[in-house]
Image (cartoon, rainbow, N blue to C red; front, side, top):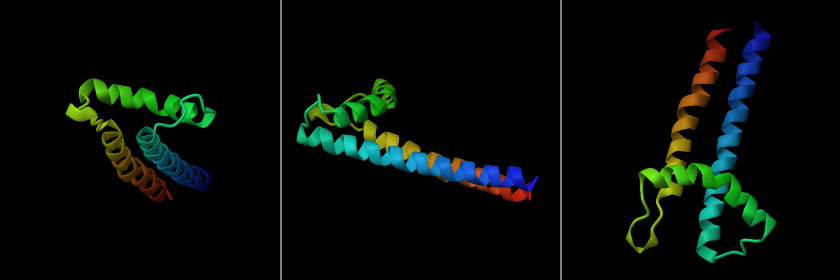
Length: 99
C-alpha cells in the first residue's frame, strides 16, 4: 500500500511541475507577442503550437477587447492557479490518508 501512496505523491509533484512550467510558457508567449518575435523561429513556433489550443478555446468565450487587449493568457493562468491549488493538494491528501 505504501507504494501506491508514494506513487500518488509523485503524481502530485509531477502535475504541479507540469502546470508550473506551462504557466511560464504562457507568460513567455505573452512577452513574445509584445516584442513581435520571428514566427519562423522554432522556439517561437513551438510555444505558439502548445499554447494556442487552450487560448483559442478561451477566446471563443471571452472575445478580444477593444484596442487589441487579449485577456485569454491571464484567464488561462488563473485556471492553472486553480488547478494547482485544487488537484495537487487533493492528490497529496489522498496519498496521506491511504497511509
